[in-house]
Image 1: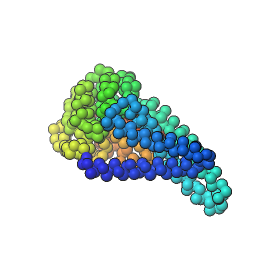
Image 2: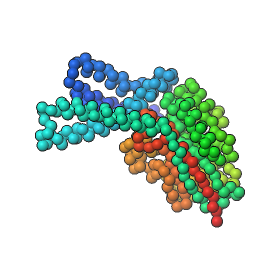
Image 3: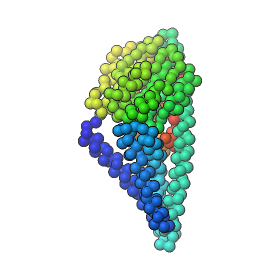
Image 4: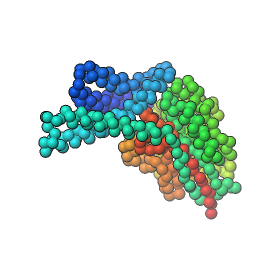
Length: 384
């Protein structure tokens, strides 16, 4: 990404973040009817919490420590809080305007209404965040059964374990990786696919604990393959990709491998390699030139965009992630509008497309609109 583009993007994000925090701060400040000291204490606590996410990201990029991890965790929960607090306070403001029309709210009780609206916002936000946290740390195995009408030699069935968006870093650490490794062992797959965003961004928190050493998979018939996601490039692909590959993980960067039975697996370079490194990925049409159309083709592509292209070029199965299925309600409603398929399974012609909500998270460790998951895709080959 060019410097001026990054500065524009950063300015917009920080402006929105600051204005949202200011709105919530003023609502709370004006609801406090006690002493001046209480308002000062409220202001200090609010400033610390509101600055934690930005401070954590800056420290993570310059000097990753346990302290920067703590700031990122606090800041992540704060991001979840400002999302729900903003929505709830906005609803209370609209409600207040409506109640003023018949005179239910007036000068005599407006302060009481503001106070209880803010306290109610705090309580509901905490409940939503707490439930979302519990939901986020209990991953599930999402199963799909897919039939591909092609022969694969003597291979009649393929048991695929796949995971997207692990986001290793300050928040997702070794305990989560050990859990993921345990899930893979219990699944007993034939092949394992990592569908991008293995690393959250900055490599410092990952290298500090050499986190990928805690990731293990069982013996499989067909091995382990991975692709890049946009976050592999955000944190610096020149460091991130070699680190991942140093752990024996085969990254497919616009490459194809052949599994037993002639099953063709294509791993695409993430489309954001162009944005961050000015490196264009190969067109799917070119990648498909070396495939045998009579044999199954599985495509690994982190971002589920231009799905019609996969259908046009006769891909049999595409596996993607990236969307997190919105991660927190109501953001999942937005991702449904942005993507043809933001989560689940879609059959376009004879092309099966599966998009996962991912295992890890970005920002808050909260899932209130989706589940953390690992994919188990049972593929049956039934050629005529």
